[in-house]
Image (tube, rainbow, N blue to C red; front, top):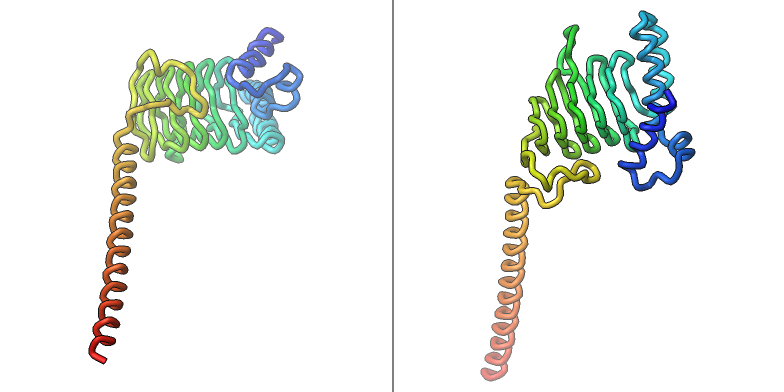
Length: 235
């Protein structure tokens, strides 16, 4: 028990540079609290005390802002950073060393009984606001970008961004490092490049139109001055 507690505290230090002390982690990290409340609710659930498990989970949601169904299976050294708004469904399964940021949903896409929530492999990082929906598998070491919506299986080591989620980077040595909020720096995203090109083109058009307006205004002023001169000459 104490060994597991020590591992969980160390995992917070490994993934959050803001952590200052073990006491701070124990008293001020709602994600840490939610995980240990879930351990109790999960024990009740697995021993047939379903109402007590749900009630304990409900208390955890009230205290932390994190909703974890007591039936969910969580691996070792799970780290929920900030945590507010995280939802983990009943049949979700998480491997070891998973990282979830605030606003993450591991949800279902049907009302059918049975497996209906995602399975996350070891070392998966899910960015803030991301939604992973349905009985899909996210492979070990994958990164899900902030606000992505994922409804299909993700291979191990891949990086997924966008709505709907699309793979933008496969496993590579430089992608193995942890990046805050599941954003991989210098990634080659063709959609982002296309949007940036359109923005730059729009700026160039605006500059051209502004220059033409200025030239037209100068011509109008010159014509007006010439007209005044002609009138004076006639008089």
